[in-house]
Image 1 (spheres, rainbow, N blue to C red):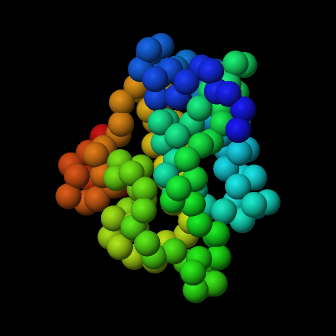
Image 2 (cartoon, helix red, strand yellow):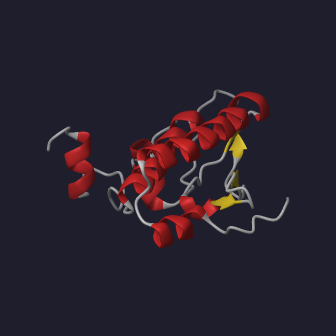
Length: 144
């Protein structure tokens, strides 16, 4: 892998503050294209997408790193459902917390939504996507 000399997206968010809509859109579009490639060309689910695993190159191009929890989208049983509880708690989809079978694509997209939230607000939306988390409950219940 080439050198990512601008460090992690997490540090960049921490140091620069909340991203403007334009800046967030720049990074998010590139990240969504990378995740699209992972899913539709490589056939892989990352399962640990978070700002700490997104590195920035000299031109601030984001690069997804740390594929330690990645798995083929077809899963171990070949039915496209994943069952293992892998990832970082604050980025894991509710199905993973509930220990239910889940779609790897949907789990990665859920994590990407949390990353986008962090780029715009400079904080995490909740600790865990569980109904026991009061902030997640507000978002899931669509309440102000």
